[in-house]
Length: 472
Image (cartoon, rainbow, N blue to C red):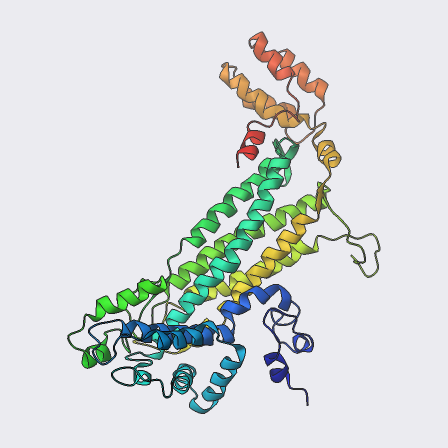
């Protein structure tokens, strides 16, 4: 019988999962395994076990450095090296051994504690047994909440933010390249005041840039205050120790803001903020995908065909905007999950229920779909060529879009019913150059103003669009 678990255990996290991927229930571990691979180091089950190990070891080391913990003196260099090695060289095989222990304990965090005890058997300190201070005064949630804090922090810093900033850089380059390309705008899907192609791309640069920085600014919080948040066990063991200061220092050493008031669990409000911030970025990216899809439909952009690829099983000519469609679909999945996480995780009955535990295991799924979408959108952008002739042809002859300019100049000079006159001339129909110029020629306005209006064309009526695009 095929043993998917044993094969998967032998495969590196950055490599293709081969036959295992065909048996995956989630496309993140199947069809999209390669694309989701960068997050495995931070959000997989292996990663969770590795981060738990890190927290347990760092807490043990921290206690050893606290003068008030008399029975655990400062660790000598060889012992520090052993502990650091357990973290730095933590492997998939180590995680498998911990999972084996979990099959007996039926408790994932206790299995990490027992594994560490096994690793430290016979390792003594000058006073007392080092192993007795593993998981000292902790509830499993102390370890778990800090593990997820570092997992989400590192996934953001090392995977998501670089990808978010990369696509913003790609868009900025396009905005600058096409800053001066005049383009017919469409409001309500209808011809509107002209803009430039670069300015419309710059809009997304500005929005994505802002949402990226808001996501980056979400503070990572955590707690290490015992079974119901009161440091009961800590005080029972060492009543004279300043446990608030000790735990604050520990959290600070991890780069985590302390959540001082909690039940058994850290309330996860910051994770809700994290999810909502990422969701806002994703929403802007959905808007981008739909706009570019529409511009491709208009012929403003063309997707370069890739040798060997097929666009349709029956229509040989097709080159479809599949990357933007793929991105939009994955963004929808990501945002549904992020929205659920944001509203569910901060809610827990009384001092603790376990609903957050199973839900938190899905943060990698939400972030995985977001990452796949980022790659798909970036790939779509990289394959685009602007069809400048089509863009120009769509704007050419749209003289009615100058009605806004003419009626606004008329207003400046106090002409009555300026808007209504242009409405009668242009609303609901196209007009040619001669009709508009004849109208302008009859206006009782200063000659230099008339000349300026007569020199205006749809392609030159773009305001500060080009300058705005170049400035982004």
